Length: 314
Image (cartoon, rainbow, N blue to C red; front, side):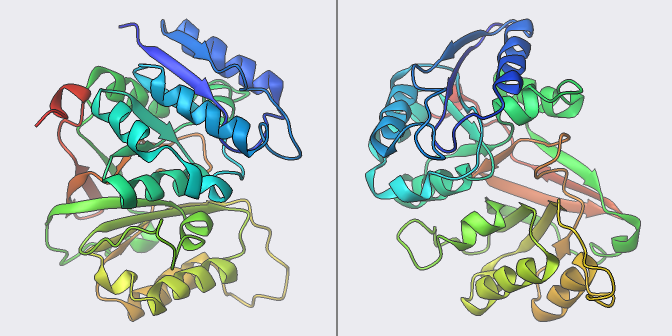
C-alpha cells in the first residue's frame, strides 16, 4: 500500500542528519513514496530556516496533495509563527485527505489549527527520532502509523501501571468527548491566547520531556487554576521522561506525588501509562477527534472509529 509522504521542517533545524536519513530510508523501505521539502535541512539560528522559510514549507506541505505531511522533528519554532499560519489552506488540505502528523512543538500548530478551524491532526512520530531511531523504528509505532495510512486505525488501548491499578475503578464510560493535548509545556504556553481551544468535556492527554516533576505540577496547576482541568471528562498522563532527580532534595516528591495530588484536586479520572511521549513506543492520537473512553480493571480502551480521508466529506 504505497502512500505519498511529504517531509518538512516547521520547527527546529535537523541536527542529527544520520537519524533523518535513516528515517527517510525506513519510510521508503516500507514502500512509500517519500517527498522531501526543499527546505527540510535548512538552518537559521536554531531553526530549520527563518520564519518565512518555515511558513513557506508549511504551505508547500498543505499544497503537496500527500497522504501524510510528516515533520522531520519537533524542538521549538511553531509558537512564533502561529499568527501567520495559512489556516484555511491547511484545513482544506486535511479535508482533501492529507493527514498532518507530528509531536512535541507540533502541539502548538495542532491546537491553533483546532481553535481556528476545528480540523483534526495527529500526535504521532517524527522522522528522525522515531522512524530514524538508532535501534530501528518501534514496531507498535509503525503498526499505528500503518493503521492511519490504511484507514484501519480505530482506537488504542493500554494497561494502567500497577501502582495506579484502581485509577479507573468506578469510572463511567465516556462518550463523544473531544480528544486533545500533547506536550504539556507547549500547550500551557498557549493558554490565554487565541490558539488555545476552548474544549469542554474533553479528554486531555499530556506528556513532557526533561521537566522536573515540580515544573510539571506548576503547569498542571496553571491549567487547573485557569479552569481547564475541571472542564474535562478525563486526563490521560502519557510519558514524562528525561528529568534528573536531585538526590536528597525532593524527599519523596516525584511524578507519583504530582499525579496523586492532582487526583484530589479534580473530579475527572487521571489515568496514567498512556504509551505516548518522547519515547520510542508511541501510539498515534487524533487531536480534535471525538472519542469513547472505557476501562475494565487496569485495561483502558479509547476508540475514535474511522477517521480516514474518505470519511471527511459529510
